[in-house]
Image 1 (cartoon, rainbow, N blue to C red):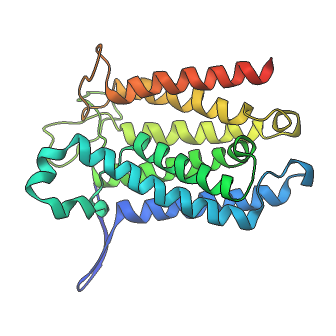
Image 2 (tube, rainbow, N blue to C red; image 1 turned 90 degrees about the vertical axis):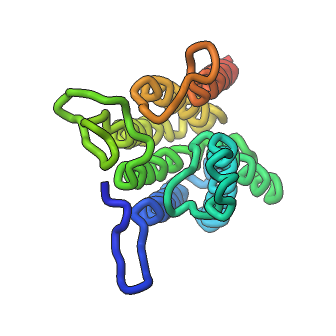
Length: 249
């Protein structure tokens, strides 16, 4: 656990924030490079427009992720309302960020009169990449930890009596694999069928998150023995499968 990366007098650099920025920059740069390598007929959004799209998605994602986190932990924030703004300490719910970023991205795409589904096919693999890098910030911050374990890969965080599953690192690894798989799907044969890459992302990430939730130690049962994130994962997995089936029909 290493929440503070650097201090110099009154200046304090939080590792969580640094990894968020690193994930954003890596995802944006890679998306721009990939856009320039695509055949012109398959480019749904230009490299220059990707920068604007990424900024809109980042802003919407931070707002959405923070609002959901605050809503889930409102009794704590009610005692210290100003802490709502302290995102450098962690406290973003991914699915809140996903829906917030998606809403912001769709608004941008519609304003530019672009095809939203084709844009998602082009952009979504890099969301997985940025997300994976950002999860490293969770590891260094000590949040999103797993349940106790005696396995060789267990990690001890301050405030825990013993080692826990490093679920943050598991998710980073899973997201990197998903990124590589989605990049393989970004071939002309698949991109000519809008929705195939985006549907694969929904199925892949929802399945990954559903499994990892069973190892998380900071979540609680929300409904039918499932956490809130597992319930959302089931919905997204079904949506992704339906999108893949419809695009193949």
